[in-house]
Image 1 (tube, each protein chain N blue to C red):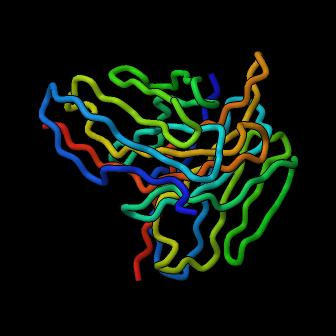
Image 2 (cartoon, rainbow over the protein chains, first blue to last red):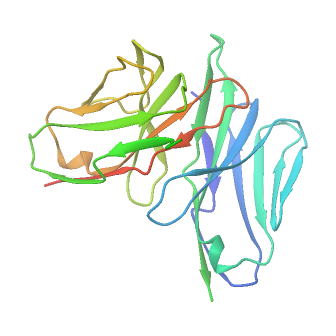
Image 3 (cartoon, chains in turn red, blue):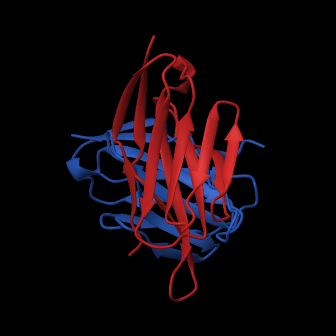
Length: 114
Length: 114
């Protein structure tokens, strides 16, 4: 079945440093979504990428979708303490039977040291 | 709109006890999902439903049951609680399951089985 791997599992950065998390799928994806979960909270949708090579920005966050639509990355510039949380990617793909499935990665937990 | 609501927020069960986790959404979404999230881990799909009267197993369905009698409600039943079911349970909903669908998560239910 479809597998979505995410690295690193944990990342500790000094406030102001950059942060990147990577997502890799075992199969070609139709789209990829990114979610953020604050400590003790629930996952909240951030963005969706659909096109090969697509790049989207949200303030200090930059999201990329690979040319082959099998990998993606989230880059945060100049991290702030408000960025603390776990970032999940979720890959969407259609099975051989034509049904659509969204598979979550295990997430990258970001800690920011003030 | 309240979005996705879950009750209870927290529950302690003894081994062998049973309980129902409630989930309600007021967004008229067809698709609903139950995930579990073990400490420091990602989301694992337990069951999902594509509409009233239709449910299907996810990645980790053993020990759980679901029903979907209405569009709004998707309760999760634990019949014989085991320590391995200690986790945080998230309910989510989406309008469709095709490309572009975003999953909206409830606040979660923290379950401790002793």
